Image (cartoon, helix red, strand yellow):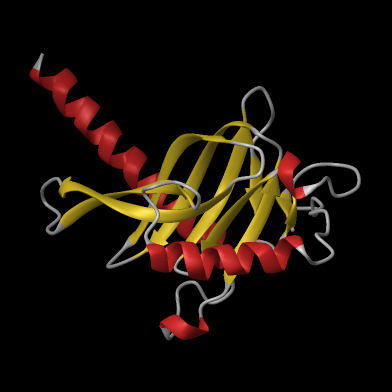
Length: 190
């Protein structure tokens, strides 16, 4: 019985190391550059028929999948792992059709972390990828454990400053040409 427990622990630790290594190698391999755009086919739809997901360079929405559809890997945010002044961080926009989504977010802190969450994108709404503290980090890590959340900018969870700054960026995007993102040869949407 003890051997089975040790084997499970070794497999679990090996899996975490391999997952972290594959994320790191993927970043070193240079995925496609992130950019703003639509993740649906055809011409741009009226803003009230789509949802916008906004995120910044210290957090990267690395993949997103709508229920019943394949996962889409998004391009990497340039300079995500460099020290950047907060005023220089760009807000990226991804426009999606309404529905239930699973999104994975890479975040930069003391270490690289990827977490996936599910949320419902409502038509005419904009969501900002943010981090939420959920308690102390599990040992041996120190500090707080965080997870991504998608804050509805029209909802009560969004602070006034978030609503003002992010909604302005969303409005600017929606008034632009709103290009469709296309899949490159490596399977990334850019």
